[in-house]
Length: 400
Image (cartoon, rainbow, N blue to C red; front, side, top):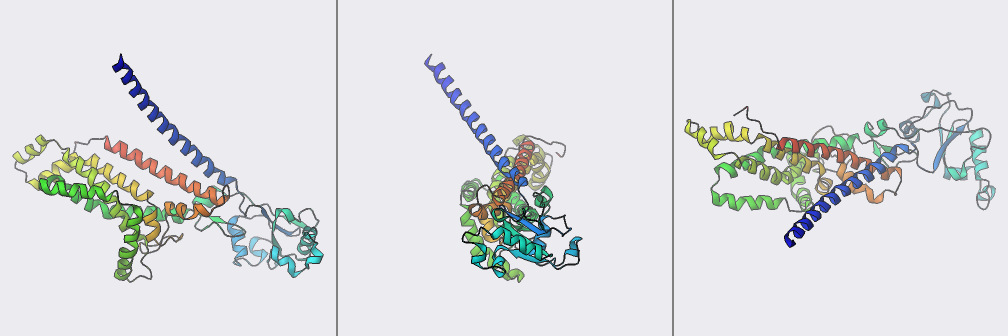
């Protein structure tokens, strides 16, 4: 009776633990996507503000990019937007003191909205960036511009990440996405040959004493904090890359790839070595008995048999590279620019979230954009995990 009760208790605890872990992951995922998808309900201008023009202004088609170009003086005439041949006059709240004194605006600025309306009526080419509380839209001669919400194309296809720009923040995620993929791809490109070579050496060539000495050391590398790898990359690798390739700075995508390759090596070596050692002894002996050399047995029998385990090691290595934060933040230059080569500074998605989440106002567009970046990273790593699971269960014997 006591044994049955003990088994039931253990079974119930294990079931509860599994259910609790699954529900926790589910709630985290729901929270992540709920916060992120709310981003597309945000207007293209800074929250709490609107844009106002003279009612005679015919221009209606506005988006965040055009607003930025106007306030950056890249567009200087309304005819460039399909309006009249009138020079664009930018107006921010501080400019009101160029027209009126504090006494004319009132003790508590009770006449501010009226005075704003007078300025906008007088200046046909004006575009005013004004808080909602001082909105002059109720006065004649003033028109509030209809600015659309941020669209998925603005976010996923945008090339500019300027979340604090006014009056129109830009949340183009393409530079971070390409930076993440670029750094991760070359990290695996560097780590795979070395990791596979070490795994083959440990499983097939190394004496047992050397294997027992090296295997724990390699697995210990996985336990080193990423910030330590970051310091190593910043102090050693970055100056080396800068000097070797004669670059202005050493914090580049190449430096990030090298650091991630080093960090992915323990995962690749450990999993690949276990897969290679799981090759049945009878298959090795049969190959040697047929006259194959040791090396021929390795690349014609052992590696094909272990293909699924090696593939899983590579996929998990990619997952480690894509999700890394601090080391990459320290050595890649952290520049949210479209990468054109491996020698450019880049910024990755995890580094962006780590660097900016603490400064983003809770519930604001910037805050929700970072959650949406997290959702993108979640989807990428989810597909990688699914791929690793499918590959690890697959056995392919046709090449043997």
